[in-house]
Amino acid sequence: MDKRWGIIGGVVLVIALLSPLFLGSSKNVQQLYNEGNSLFTQRKYTDAIELYEKAIKASKKLGAETRVLDKDFTALAHYKIALCYDKLGETTKDVTHYKSAIDLIKETLLRTNVHTHKENLTYLWAQILYKTESFEEAEAKYSSFVQFYPNSRNVEEALIRIGTINTDLNNHEDALIAFQRVIDEFPTSKFRSEAEYYIPKVLVEENKTDIKVMNEDESMYNIALEKFNQNQDYKAYQLFLGIIKHYPESNVVSFAYEGIGDIYNRNDNLVNARHNYEKAMHSTTDNERKQVLLQKYRNTFLMPDTPDPKTNPSQISGLFVKANLLRIERKYAEAAPLYEKLSNSEIPNDDIAYALYWGGYSYYKSAIYDKSVQLFDKFIREHDDSPELLKTYYYLALTYYEWGKQYGHDKTKYQLVIQTVDATLANYINIQNSPDRRWLNNLRELKDKANKYFSDDNDIPPPNPKPISPNVKKLEHYDQAWIFFDENDYDMAISEFEKCLDIDPYFVKAYCNLGVIYILKKDYTKAINELSQALNIDPRFKEAHFNIGLAYLRIGNFKEAKIAADKALQIDANYEAAQVLRNSIAN
Image (cartoon, rainbow, N blue to C red; front, side, top):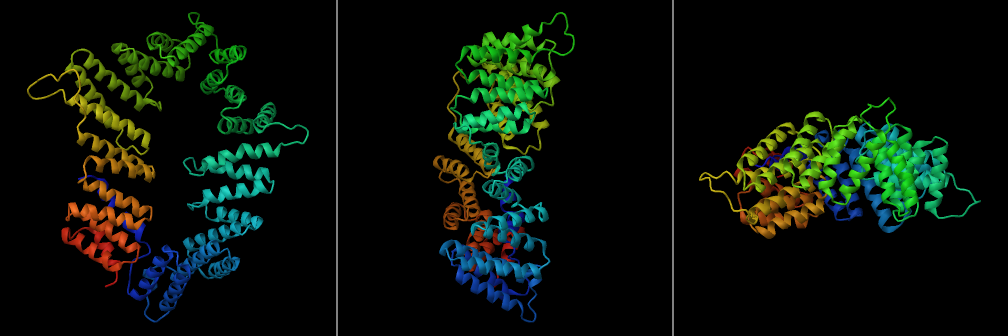
């Protein structure tokens, strides 16, 4: 069974989508609360407030055990009401609704001790202050929020708001601190690009003078140089980077790359220095300037200790430059032996790894497969901590595969493909990041291709490969869809699942997965349509019954949600997710 169904149909997703929908004995309170949620999703905020208030009133009656719903149900409902007032303020532009929200938030914060409710109420308060342009108060509230709730999922956005407010208030240092925290503490944040955008802008504003009037890219560059000369490498780096990102066509981009190279060089990070000098050379057409940059590039290869008499540092730097330029020009047969020579030189370990990788790649592209295998194999043995290791495994397997094709489908080479892939998969069992999963998928595909040459009757397939079967294409789109899903790129995942259905209109898993994505996107009508398609094809598909039940629950159709849960349990009485769903719905 596909292990992913255990996630989609499992208790984890139930809790994520249903909380706080679990019932104790207070079914009336729960029903009123659910109906209020349904009206909220329909943007009927005034009606939702009325039902939340009724739910609070019902929770006060004797025998209403609301702790099974929430530790402090009244605070939860008040938070929902405050959200409604906030939305009414947005839609009507009537600021009295914002005032009502803040008054209710203040009152609730005094009465609740539940950490989650205090966190949500404080953040909503800060958001409302920001929307009503009470910026100084908003900045103080956001700062308080970050201080007291450092693990909240809203900290990243709060830091961005602190940064933008301080930018507008010309509090440049405070703005920079906030933006830098987003970059340092949340490397995968969706707000990272926004922080990177603002940092150079703030640095320019901080150093603006009325004496010179110039373009912003030139102004940014001059300030960056000034910071560099003052040994303020962090600020100089951010400004140089800002030029490259925001003004890619600017005449000073080459100088910005050079500046970053100089920063790395000054901090003895010669590999990154070299990388940026190379980019600087490719970003200019000025031949004199290229010569200056080339000399800086070469100087990064000069060793501080006394070099081996056999090794000429100037010659080494020249070889690297020549090899890289030949590779960029796709003259792989000429570049490969230069990289091989460099890999046997007395140079830093990182440079040896670099030379081995590109040497192996260049030999592969030149169809000199024995040499390619030799360099890739050496890279794997001697640089097993390199971030390029998985990619090297892939190219080693690919080299064996192409080598086998070159020699009339040599099965010994195809066997080496299979062995290489199996060894790699054994070393990369618990892979989390998507780029690595893609390389592993590529390796599996290579193994599948190699396996085709091991038929029982030992017939050798024809040299021209057969067209990829529709089923294989379907599964390729299916795997790619899951990669996008794991990255939360739902639109691309939808596109890939739909491609599966273009090939196979009866592929029930694709319909069910589309339904799950639409639930996550809160487009419940589309979710129900997709899941209904799955059930039309396979009425005993329990996961589809479960997920359509979630969709019905979200739109407040408790009758259909109950029916769907019951059908899933008829198929599998021990289906725990469906049991939780069924138990959460009043009779």
